[in-house]
Length: 191
Image (cartoon, rainbow, N blue to C red; front, top):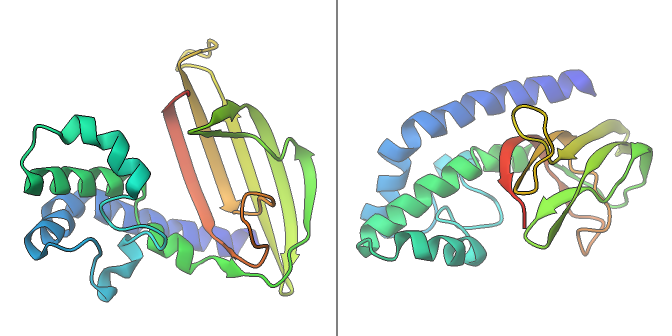
């Protein structure tokens, strides 16, 4: 279980570095020049599986104020670079996900509803395990509201998550794909 995760996560780190280093130079300009919202299939590991490569509608609305004065082509370029940095190599994580007909998750410890999102924040830690299709999987998540010096913060929080998405209740269908997670967000604006 842990070796499979470490190998997948190591390859994701390589892909994420490629996207960080080359995305602004090759991937995002390609979207602008070709006037497309998605990468070609050969670059699918860099493309989020559930959104366009320039971000979804909610992300576009958030970034509209930032890019309002830009020409259309520059706004698309900036959005695709920022979305790629927000979701680096997300297609690889989705490809390493698991499809489960039925999922039974064991909560080892913690609060299963911790999160920082558009609708609020709930802090704590959580560790879950599950056996799916004969293989074992895990999900470890930590959400907090401390600054870099360890002091409580009312403006920013952080989230660290490793493993597969074993959260139950967020998805309308239990048989959805459970993505691999390598997620470290050190500074998230609290709602």
